[in-house]
Length: 428
Image 1 (spheres, rainbow, N blue to C red):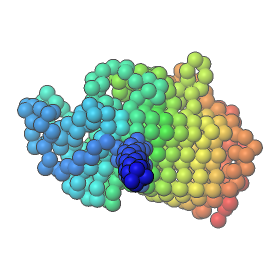
Image 2: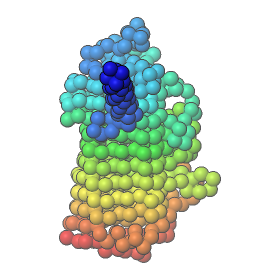
Image 3: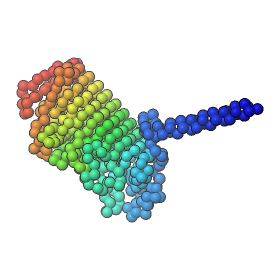
Image 4: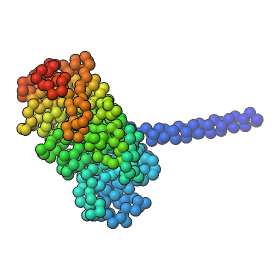
């Protein structure tokens, strides 16, 4: 009798222990999923909200009672209301359902936020707010928390907003509508940012993305298409820059303008067409007498075609970086002589290998460089190639060079072009 009772209590104890372990496992698994967003779960983090173009702002935001709230600004205020909610909560995911969202003003995106654009979503740059006191902005998204959006010099180094993801599902589009100087996404001083599977279209003297002072960024499976023809076509779809008052390359007051470079930026499996430039840097910075370099830039497996201007890939003060397995096919250069698929200046240990270049004047050219106009007081920047860098250059393939040049020019002296070092490429 005593033994049976003892066995009964033992069984109950074992059952209770197993139940507690099961609950703990479920709880911990949930915590791990929420703490480590990834591609498999669309980078979801925090509570998930879904909206349509007809969704109104969150009640707690009081935006509906604003005089500036109307049919033209509705989508802007609605999405911004969720960003403010996510800032308070510390994280969150917003899913945009199919439809067209007109965004008139900057949507400020805080840390630990994921924005998912479902199939058929179109985000378009709105230009009219119907309120004189709130004119439309030039940009759509800026990666800065709403509570700091109007403050000055609050971010430096890589201490800005973190863990922000833009994910397209199916065909999702950000359309700048050829609005003058408009930008789709502005990154500054951020860490851990993803932009995946989104179509960017219709640029006009701005950029689809501005990436400055940012660390651990991945831009993958995106398309970038159409730039309005202008006198100045040297505008990058993706601009890689430093926040520097001297060069005037980053015009956002919330930055400390401390010349922080980018680290670990990957642009992979994307396509670019009918643009001035695809990816590049157009100004370099000098800090404490030393050249500032973007490090760990990887440009891989991209297709670049039918470009309007010289050097669709512009490398300027990049270090320990890789440009590989890209295709640059056709530069439409009625007003440009001696066009190159890639122009390289201030490169330190940059491997350029296994790229295919078609229908340009020259495949790749290296030259010492000095900033024009703003930033021209900085000293000239020079290339530094290792033996491995030189060997890698010979793996590139050139097809139908207009000039008949099937070699890479390396001009080591500033302003001297008549006696270049050359490296032969694979010619067809």
